[in-house]
Image (tube, rainbow over all chains, first blue to last red; front, side, top):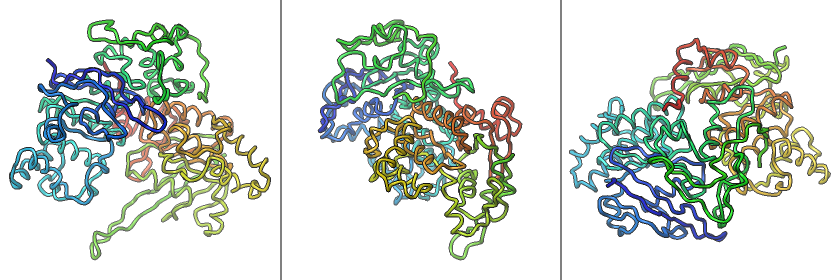
Length: 337
Length: 264
C-alpha cells in the first residue's frame, strides 16, 4: 500500500462565471521516498491538487467535491480542521515558489524554524533551537549558529529557499510538497537547490510531490511524472518513459517547446491556441483544439477520454486523435492565438 | 559601423555599514566596454547581483555613471543635462520581467499604447481615427487582435500581457530596446511564442536589442552575440554559438553546467 493514495479528487470553484473545474477526477499514488512530479502550464490545476490535499483551498468559493486521499489510514479530505492541523506542517509539509512571501519578514528565522517543533513536538525553546541550528547546518547555511538570529531579508534568494527547506524538513515529514521551488531562482542557484533537495531526501527518506512547469527540472528530480492539462492527468509514467516514449500529443508538444533543445536560427516550436476555459463544460478531448497530430480529426468530441494503462505503470488518455504521430511539415506561425 | 558603444563604463556605489560604519565601495559595473551593431541582439548573461540591471540603467540614462561613456549613433549620452536626457528617452525602451507589474492596471491597452506613441507624435490623439489606426497597427505588429484595444491588462493571459508590454516599448520607435528577463515569468510554451516574436521584430524592424537573462539556453537561441557578466565585469563576449559550444571563461562554463539537462 502506497504512502499516499489519491483517488478521484475533484476540486471545483463556484464563481460568478460558473463552476470552474480546477481539478477534475485526479488519481495518483506517492510511495515512501519517491519523488512524484506534477507538470503542466499555469492554470492546469497542479497547485490546486496539492492545496486540496493540505486542505488549504479557500471555501467558499472552492470546494472539494469528491474523492479520497488515504494517508496512514486517514482520509485527508474528510479530517476535521483540528485533525488536519496535526498532519499539516508536521507529517506533510510544503515549500513554495517565492520564499520572501512565505517567510515572515517581522520574525527572526529562529522563531519561524522552531515553531513547528514547539507546536507539534511540544519541545522547549532551547532544545528546539539546537535542532534548528543543526537543520540549518544540514541545508548548507554557513555559520548557522549566528545566522539563525537573522531576518529573512538578510538572506539571498537561494539562501532563503534553503531556510524554507530546513523549516519544511525539521519535523521529518513523510511527504514534502514542493510547489515550483526553483522557478524564481537563477539557474546556478536552481541547480544548488535541486541538489540540496535530493541530498536531504536521500538522508531522510522523505517522499516529494514536485510541482513544476519546467520539464527539464522534472527530468532531474522526479521518479514518476503526472502530466496535467485542464484539470486532468493526460499522461502518467515513470520519468524515463515520459522522455523516451511520450504518448500523448500534449506531452510531446511540451517537450518540443523546450528552448534549450531547439536549433538556433529556426522559429521555436509553440503550441497553438490557449488552454480551454475551465468554467465551461468540456464535452470531449480537452487538448483537441490545440492538437497537431496527423490524426487530430479523430480527437474525441462527444466524451472525455479516460486514462488507460498502455504499458506497465504508463497511463495515457485514450483519445485516438492525441495518440497519433505529429504531422511532418508543419509551418510554424508566430502569432498563434 | 558601431551603433551603440560603451567605453569603460563604471558605476561604483558607496555604502556604509550602519550610521557610523565604515564606508565600502561596491563596484556594481566595473569598466564595461561593449559595442553593438544596428539590428543586433546582444545577449547579456549573469546571475542576480552581477550588475546586469545596473548596466542597463546606465545605458538607459537612469543612473549617471561614475566614469566612462555611452555613445549612441555617434552621440555622447553620459553627460547630457537632464532636460536633454528627457528628450532622448523615447530612444530607449525597456521590457520587464513581469508584465503584471509593469503595465498600469487602470489603463486600457489603447491608452497605454497611445501614451507611448505620443512620445514621438504628440498630436496623435487629436484625431481619434488616426490614433486608433496607430494603435491597431502596433497591436498587429506584436500579434494582438486590435479588437481588444479597449480591454484592461487583467483581461489578457500572461503571454498576451507581455505582448502589450512589447507593443508599448515599440510605440516610441526606439533606437534601442533592453529586454530584462522578458520570458522568465512565463510558462515554457508561452516563452517560445514571445522569443519568436522578439526575433521576428528584430529582423523586420531592424531593432537593436540587449536581451538580459540568467538562462543561457534561452539567450543562445535569440542572441547574435553573448556577453557574460560576473561581478561587474564582462568576462566573455562572442558569437552566440561559439560561447555556448566552446566557452572560454571558467564562469561561463559554470553557468552552462547549471542548465538542467534532460537525462534519462
